[in-house]
Length: 263
Image (cartoon, rainbow, N blue to C red; front, side, top):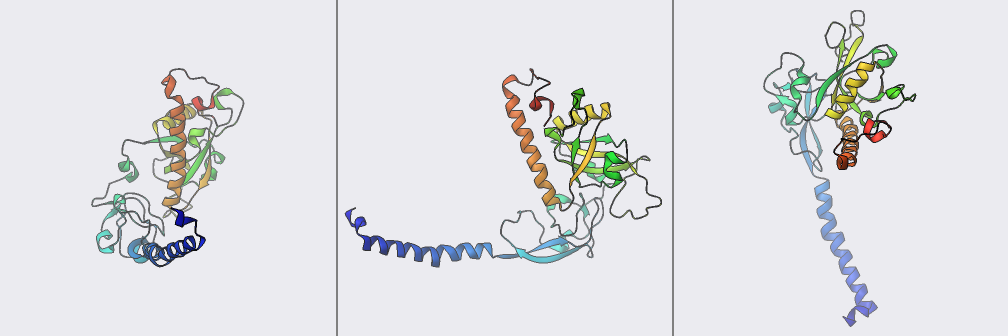
């Protein structure tokens, strides 16, 4: 390999490699990144359970790179189906958010898969529930004053980011939906229903019994960005569960933040 010590030979090899990268590999990468495709995008807010009409969606051309495999690309297939989740303006539609049949009520409860649970907590004051302005799809943090009588106010680590799937008035009807514009007849929220892992549901039940919790709005926007917050929260819970594995959860120290959910 003595010829590699020759600077001229090394220079030629470097030039050849750079030409290969510039004229072969780079065009291939660019062509993949710049590829275009048609997808169905939401142009009018669609509530869970509503039929999707031709006025609420539009086919647009976007970059094909990194799109989910199940994104819908044909508006004709989407129109006439029912949304199984709230769809905001600008969302693209994936097949798991579509149904051939309309659920009669509480559509969001039909989307539970067994991994997470729906649990409601009481909004005990106007301030505790963001002055009645919370709505489904919001990401909130749960703030607990005097957590477990320890004299401190905390955001439990397992309740940093939780999704609201329903806001309900005292009469049991859903409140604060985007289509509800009759402010004179609108009732203030009495409870909020959260989508929670079993660990979160247990702590929420405890806080509900104690009557001490505030909800702070963290994010309101597209479902894709909201999912990023939930992904972070799920990872936090996974890490806490791994740390608890050696004692199988049988030796919990109430002063340990990882065992009691305190941040």
